[in-house]
Image 1 (spheres, one colour):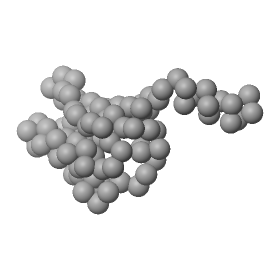
Image 2 (cartoon, rainbow, N blue to C red):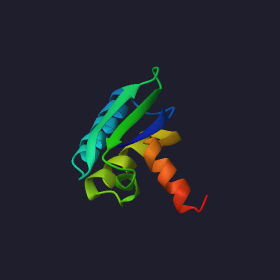
Image 3 (cartoon, rainbow, N blue to C red):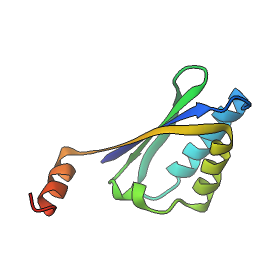
Image 4 (cartoon, one colour):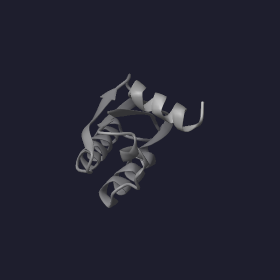
Length: 103
């Protein structure tokens, strides 16, 4: 299992309703991709959202986006700026990567 958390901050001229709709559209597009378990967004104050995606493995986040997801992320980027991103994975995966590095 892997988790991706993306933080977005509304641009000054962006409508909050449009921002919420764009985030929902991106979540729907990501949910439709193979290997994705869930994709949701949460408001973090009146001008910020966080997207939370859960996938079967971290490799899902490395794949090129589907056409609907690419379109949706650009629509969201017109309304908000990405201010941060975190990828979380299971401890076993991290240990495996550490061993592969020859440590």
